[in-house]
Amino acid sequence: MLFKGDFDEAVFEALKSLPQESALTVTGVVKADPRAPGVPGGFELGVRAVELGQRAEDYPITPKEHGIEFLMDNRHLWIRSARQWALLRVRATVMRAIRQWLDGEGFVEMSTPILTPSAAEGTSNLFEVAYFEDKAYLAQTGQLYNEANIYAFGKVYCFGPTFRAEKSKTRRHLTEFWMVEPEIAFCDLDQLLEIEERFVSHLVKTVLESNAQELKALGRDLSRLTCIVPPFPRLSYDDAVVKLQAMQADLRAGKPVLRYDGAPLQGIDDPALLDITWGMDFGSPHETALTQLYEKPVFITGFPTAVKAFYMEPVPGRPEVCKSADLLAPEGYGEIIGGSERISDPAKLEARLHEHGLPLDPYRWYVDLRKYGSVPHSGFGLGVERTVTWICGTEHIREASPFPRLINRMYP
RNA sequence: UCCUCGAUAGCUCAAUGGCAGAGCAACCGGCUGUUAACCGGUAGGUUCCAGGUUCGAGCCCUGGUCGAGGAGCCA
Image 1 (cartoon, rainbow, N blue to C red):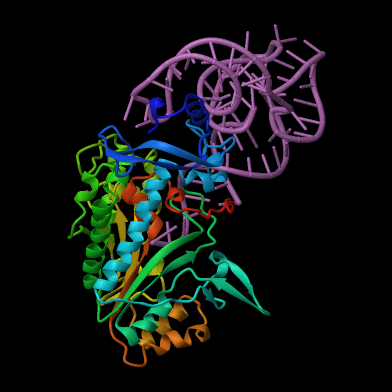
Image 2: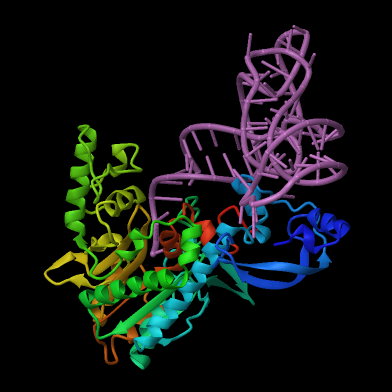
């Protein structure tokens, strides 16, 4: 805060004309003033002396609305803006809380490789890189390696960037994103879900404690976060399909479909988007609809074995479904966690590889894990940017990463 | 890969097929407890590219390029 009386008229005029984002060193007296904005706010600096560092010229981001292409071209400057600044500070809190909670629960952090050998499972979703005379692929999961790690360390997690070469152009997809993947020995699906709901609740609670001002700056409705405590509702895939079919029928009949709080369902423009029969995987419209039925995140359990990965344990007596669970964030945000109990029997695993048409050779080490002291085990992967997007109540995932990588975006 | 929409001043957007416009930013002046301030003035254009229709195209047609939203796939 500068006052005219504290400065020579000419100096005051010169300072006043400094362009936005010029660099200054200021000296002054800190004082409390309720009118002062910012984070944490309530304090301001009565400036007595100013030393000019660098005078900025034509700062591109002006105090008005900008288009997304322009802002993304100027991402290196956009992160200075209040909203982006708040969002990225929440992201840092989430990343800290992830390690804090897992370390406190006795998990051991294990790095899994980012450069991985030619995966036999379709490489269309993987980024290929030159590896000397050979080819390598950027990892899209560390899970298989973590299954090896648990037999040495019990409870482990890997936490790092992961890569998907999917040609997705939606508000939920990045081609490079951060994922934390815990894996636990002697753990079945029910126990896994208890870990997940405690974990996610801790992340939300830590952000509420650490970033109240940031959430306020983002305009987040805090009541949507303070309610995030265990237990989370569990909905079987079977029941979810029935619910979706009923919702679709009501929409088609013009009957109101209500959210958990009694307000009308949002975001389903065409009832045909909710088409589903048992056996189909969920698309994003299905997640959008289901998540609005609950105040908290909801687990969808027991997906059809056919639409899920080969390593998921089939349900005893009902092999057409597997011990899998996705966690869908509320308010239409959708999947933030995918998890399952893994097959622990070597013969069963080999049979599943065969059913998926996968060669045994690249997975020999993975099958080995079931031959030497195999135990029931489970794990999950949580997407950091999706979680931050949900906690912050943000429209698009690209703002949850400092320098997001999207299908059409590598700069800056 | 598919569907929908879009591209005009530095930025955000207007403009019946008939002179290219506004707000913000910049620059000049006024004002000061402002927070995307306010008042007055100045300057700012290869209307994405290549063709075509027309007396005349920012606008209509064809083909591209780029972007946004969505689908599929997924965290």
